[in-house]
Amino acid sequence: MNRLVPKLPAHAVSTIHQFLRAHALSEGATGVVVGMSGGVDSALTVRLARDALGPERVLGVLLPDARFPPALRTETEEYARFLGVETRTVPIDRVERAYRELLPEIQDRVTIGNTSARVRMTIDYALARERGRLVAGTGNKSELLLGYFTKYGDGGSDLLPIGDLYKTEVWELATALELPATIRERPPTAGLWEGQTDEGELGLPYSQIDQILYGLEQLRTEEEIAEATELPPERVHEVAERVARSRHKRRSAPVAKVGLRTVGLDWRE
Image (tube, rainbow, N blue to C red; front, side):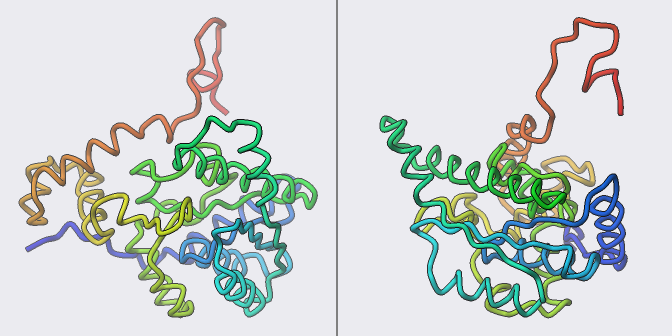
C-alpha cells in the first residue's frame, strides 16, 4: 500500500491565516500585494489573504504580456472582483521589448522567460512599497523543492503563505474552498512561452512528483520511494537530483567570512 501521498492537514487554513496576519500586519506593514497569473496558486493565495486580512488589505496585480490570453485576463479580474479585492493591471510588453532591444543576442526562451518573471517581480515590489505592503509570493512546496521558479523573479517575495503545501494539496484546498472549477482545472503553467506547461517541462504529473517529494521529506531512500510508489527508480532519481541541484535557489547568497560575525552564518536575526 502506497502511504507516500501528501494529505492536507486539518489546521492548514487556520495556520496560514495566522501566518498572514502575523507577517502582513506587523512592523508597519498594511497588507499584501499578490501577483495574479490566472492559475490556482495565485488564486488560492489571494483568497487566503482576503479571508485573513480583509479585502481592503489585498491588492491583486495582473502583469500580462503579449502571450497572456485576453479571456484569461478578464476571468482573473472578475475573480478578484468577486472576492472584493482591488486589482491593478499593468501590461509589461514595452518593458520586455526594451530588454530584447538592449540584449538582442539573447535568444534562449528560458532566459527571456526568466527576464519577464523578474520584470513582474520589480513591479510587484514597486506597488507594494508605495502602499506600505509586503509581497506575498504564490510558490508552493513542490515548486520550491524542485527549484521550479525564477530566482529573483516569481521566487522573490516577502512571505510564502502556501509554500508548505504540495501542489496536490493546493488543488485539494482550492476544491475545499470552492474556487472556480475553471481555475482549479487549468493545466499549471509558468506562462514563460506559448504552450508551456509545468508537467510538460518536469516530465511527470504532480500527482507522482509529490509522492516522490513527500518520500524525500520523510527521509525515505530512493529505493524505498520507488517501491512504495511503484514508479521507475530512474524517475525517482531524476526528481531527487533536481531537488539537490536546485538547492542554491532555496538559500540566501553565501557570504565570504572575514569578520567576527557574518550575515547568514553566525550573525542570526
